Image 1 (cartoon, one colour):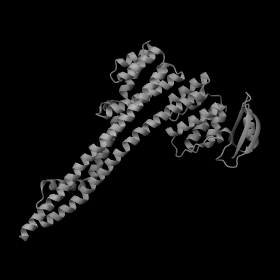
Image 2 (cartoon, rainbow, N blue to C red):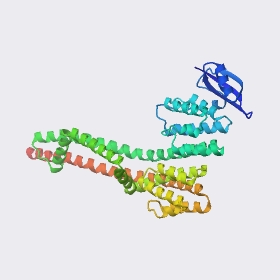
Image 3 (cartoon, rainbow, N blue to C red):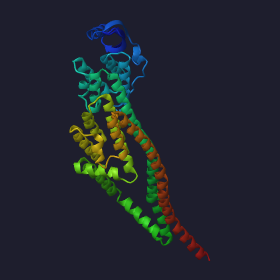
Image 4 (cartoon, rainbow, N blue to C red):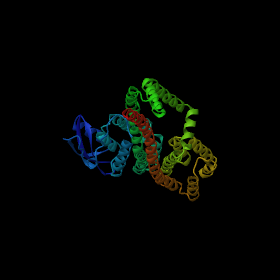
Length: 414
């Protein structure tokens, strides 16, 4: 197929431009005419990587791999929002985005979404056929945007939501990267000393007849046990990992795991704040977008990803259904921080629930950044002290027999 760029006028007389694939220029002309466009210009695109019109001013979406990532969804929503705001029709905007996407999976899905729209379905209905790519939160917001005629605003709002979530994940991940590198490198150094350095030194001491002090004997026995039974240790680790994953997949195991995540020293409060941030931002975005509060609560329950918090949100759904308030329901649940409950209550009283929820998310974002930094500052020196103690013990175990050997040699010399 060849690529063509076109300039046309829609039913309202607005100028529309873009690029599409077609066998011939006449085929594209027929397609655009069926959509109600009055085509004024069609010409082939020499470089397929440089579409014309409005899209030409936007950067290409260069996606790799087969899985549709969160970052790819951010770019997709921003592109679609910008094109709709610029006056392009929905079908034209989608076709231009498809032309730019290199991710085969995402491109195929968007083609099916476009085909659904051409058959008469709405964007929310067509996208709803692919829940793994377009979650219920997204399709619900789309429905509200289509009903109110603010689809470009809703798309922009959703892109900010997933962008904030993406930045939060990056923030936590980057802050914990250095401590994790320290842990891996330190474990590698200790393992190397235990399996190579200590056994070789012990063999030398045994040949000279020097008695081994208890630290040296202990390390030697430990290194021999690890060297001879490393396959068993690996199998045991794999079995433990498999059992933990199996238990986490059961209702009982998931509940215990979620409880542990919220009760862990130091990390428990961080996990709770991450859950609260994700939930509050999602609910705030939906309420601001016009999603009914009960429907928004039900959808936001799924993004909490913690059974204890989900249970509290479920109780709030029941309370709202009976005419109650979210803040009153959360006040009876100890899993929701008091500042969250107070801000939600104020939002319900003043009719600014969406703004208060987004303020909760922003407030917790700052707290998470500070806490992650503090945890990183605590973990690094604590782990360095621990590793230093272990390495010091190993060095002491190696040096003690050397001192004994030197004393024996001096005694013989005298």
